[in-house]
Image (cartoon, rainbow, N blue to C red; front, side, top):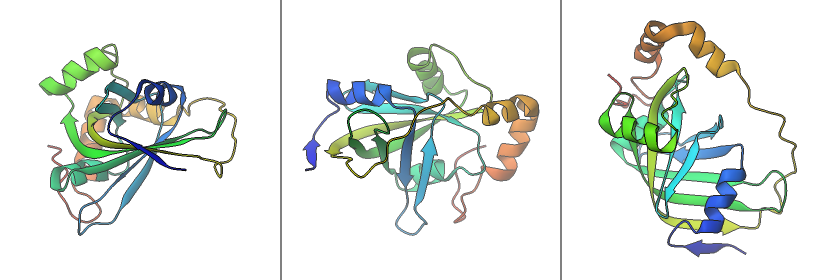
Length: 182
């Protein structure tokens, strides 16, 4: 039932735009595998070989460490309502640090220049393989809305508090890999 494609087709981009949650997976040859759910309307298809998401400050920064030391990245999007489908996008990822030129350009072009409280970096995926599968085993769920907890937490921290938190919690992965966050 799985089908493979060498690019993000328009129907894939439309499917991605309708979803409220996506999952990222990364690792190095010697690290633990990191699998993270993402939301907050952060995923954007840039063209038929590239997508990105606006990454928020969290309890760890495993994806950044893995991108710095390996680069392999998979994004999975699946339908929790409507017709079933699972879409996986495979490729090489890059973390664009907050405040950098590439970050600012993507923030402007892909996110209308809106930087939510707690934004940490933009992760870009250069896609070399797209795979769809049926998704028949994925349950049906009703979307009720985004959780506001992360953005509220970031707002209460303020810029100084977020910087201190990132320095303490986001500079090194759980396997001791440097995340590149300075």
